[in-house]
Length: 397
Image 1 (cartoon, rainbow, N blue to C red):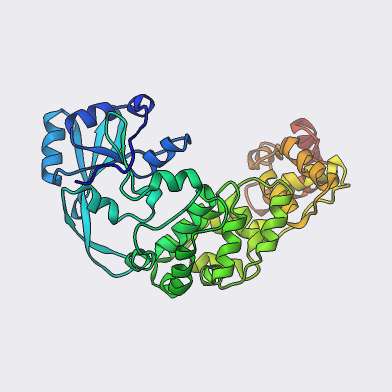
Image 2 (cartoon, rainbow, N blue to C red; image 1 turned 45 degrees about the vertical axis):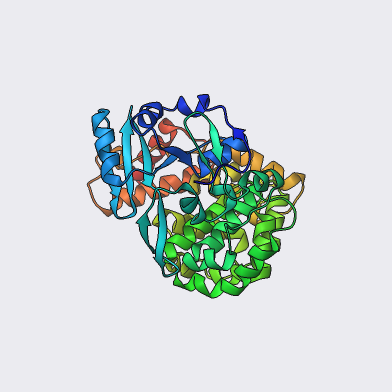
């Protein structure tokens, strides 16, 4: 096994304080933390999920966990992945492996006990590091230096890494948005530009998952502009995209909301995109709601804003105001007013009409709609008593 390229050590105390992690590492003494946990610990960023790798074959992992009284779930046995459950937390443990055969989407793997070989199959140098339980970091491909310099580089030949899985094209932009600084790696961008055709081989779900993560970055503008320059943006959003609109949205201080950013970026058919990329029903409906529908005028009075809120959630109205508004105090003021104003709720239901002796049937709905229109015309301020009195007046008419 090749030694680390430089002696670096992380204080493992905070990581090992995660529920059950110390017990898992004690059961698998050869295991190390890998990937994002090591990268983010080195970068002093919050660590989300913790994954582990081990030279032990999957069957041995299961045996060791069972001997330690820990439950093992074979979540990806064909690729050597076991999930260990300890103290209510789950940790994915994958046997070291190498790719034997790839088709740009899937890989056939063989297990190995060589950490460097396993690191060589990973996408970027900053994701190819591993850390032992004592905090020693193993860095075979200068990931530490690249992380410090803000360089997102493929491990080895970029074209070969991309050909193994074309999703790595989009992953590059995700990591460039979050960890990159300065000009992107020229070898990476050249390989991406030559491999854009491979994105068509990916499942829509995988493309949307990565695109959503790119748009969720604190500042994705440079990465999206680079995607546009390399032809990647047109490949994933053939409906049409305008990076400048995303820049205008950011200039107004809009939140890092991937659906809102997609609504700004997209120039074409939102329904067609939602179907093509297989957005969830909730995502599809929210994207449509952001792009279609009225926006209150910044000079609107409180009654008009209450009427708008009675029909549409504040989040959607604020999003529309970002998308169709302009920089400046008046639109910022409108968004602030919408955020601060409670959403009015019409206080009546069908039972109120039935209590007045109205027979069940279409007339109940007609009366409620009439009273609701009266309530909204008055600025949505009438309470339950007033609305019931109006309902009674109309029921008697």
